[in-house]
Image (cartoon, rainbow, N blue to C red; front, side):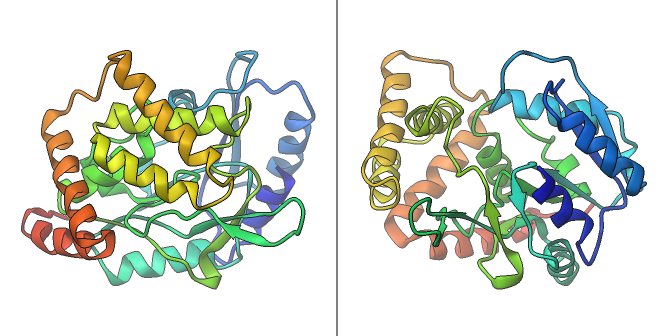
Length: 290
């Protein structure tokens, strides 16, 4: 956590206000946070009741809104949902703001996540698509965040939001550049119960969002080619299939699900980069910068 705190307070553009939600930690977290709030006035800590376990998916968003709802966000142009297990490069926020000022249609953006190989120490990309802002550092133009209705309180909230942005004509994007590459101290999909549980949860999230079986299979095969080899992609696919066989509830926004399915088919047929570029051009007519 200190790594994340230091990487934020050392940014070339610091947050005007940083609300940290402490989920009732019983370790040294409160003491560490108190140390930083005393030194940096823009940091505010809000404590929630200890749930007795770490929560992911909807629990993460509940924690986010516990802090968000106590802030007058109308005072700010940008909003960021930030995890406390990251090491950000010093110009991270400055660079994102510059990009958004250059293109008013960019509604959400981020850099790219990397993690260190435990054996070699090498940095390995988490292979996040360019058409998404990553969940651990969701940087938003406030007007866009309000236009899409904020985050869905369910697993895959960090994918649904980007699709909703495109549906409304906004651009969701991430860049893989030195000033925007950050280290994720806990790799994506690595649940507190293990990597398989985390990837299965992702598979359920894709099912919930409305992803089709063909696209999910292609995505799972792609993930099999990256660490953890085979196992991660296989767990994603089984998480999806298990949810499908159990007929679990799915996302209720039918129009957005149709929009997502159509886009995913275009990605399979044309490649994700071309499909995203064409869709962003098509949706320019419906965009409104409120």
